[in-house]
Length: 198
Image (cartoon, rainbow, N blue to C red; front, side, top):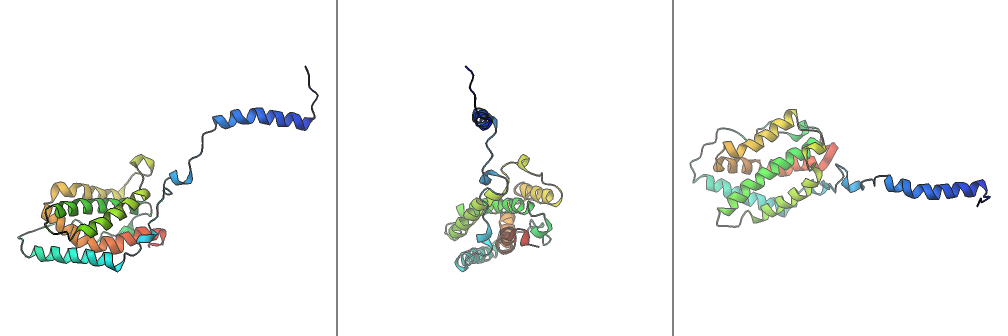
């Protein structure tokens, strides 16, 4: 049976029959949140920490410096040299470097807290864990998801990775504690400022 349809009706029928099969074959685009660099990366809140949070870190650092007077320690190398400056890295590399710096800091401070009878590190550890959880949304989940670290970033990441194997716990603790305020007030602020950190 032949139907005499106006050209416009034929076009509509063709589109209606073709469109469902075509949309079924087209891959569903990823939502914006799943794209690299847009996965809920919200670091602007960390441009500056509250006075209460900074005070908790200061108390922990002061207590650590006091305990140093009772120890006979000698650390020759500086894990975080003065030349360590996230501004020397590309914007996408900075969260990767900060994440490694923060992960090492957390590992060392947690080991310190476990061997310490007082709870002076509880609040700083809570704050650092919160920052670390937010920061992980800004770092590619796997190295294959983005550009591979090279140059200065590769050197820094390797240095942080090797530190626990090469340094004593006391020296790691000293390095992390003396770097704490630079991490919080300079490195974190730089990552939170994005491409405005120059």
